[in-house]
Length: 237
Image (cartoon, rainbow, N blue to C red; front, side, top):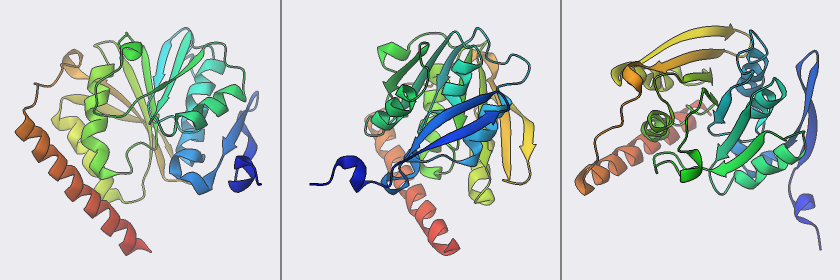
C-alpha cells in the first residue's frame, strides 16, 4: 500500500529568503492552493528583513499556508509568532514549522469571520498576510477577522498579487470604506505583487452584533460573490 506522502505530489524546497536566510518549505500542490508557495509570500518574507520590522514583536500570520512569512518573521527576531490557517489546512502549516527552527512559533486553527479563539485574544504588534485576497467572497470575513485581531498600535502588512484587478480592487475599496488607512510600501513589477502597510484608524472598533437576518443576507452575498469568482476564473481559461 502506498504511503500518504507517496499519494501526494509533496516536495521540500530550500527557499532563499535573503542572502543569509534559507528555509525549508514543504509543498503539495495537488492538495490545493494553501499547500504551495506563491510569489507574494517570498516577497513579503524578504521585506520583513528590512529596518527591524519584526524584531522583538508579537506577530500573527493569517492564512499561513506553508508558513514562509511567519517563519521568516521568527528568524528575523520576532518575540513570538502564531501561524494560523483553516483547521483542515493547519497540519500542513505545522509540518512546515517542524521543518525549520521554531522555538518562538506556534500554530493555531482559525476560520475567518468566526470570531477569534481564546488563544488569539491577545495584543499583536504585527499581523501578516500574503495572497489572502484572491477570493472576493472571503473579503468580508477576512476584514472581520482583521478588525478583531488589531488594536490601535497594530501594523498589518499584506502582500497581494494582482490577477483579477477589477475584482481584487474591491478589497482595497472596502478597506477605505471601513476606516482603514493603507499605503503601498513595496512593488515587484516582475510578479505584479505589492506589499501594503495597513492600520485601522480609531483603534479597530468591533462591528455591531449581527442578527440572524443579517447573517442570512451575508451568506447570500458570499454565495453570489463565490459564483462571480468562479465565473471570472473560468473566463480567463
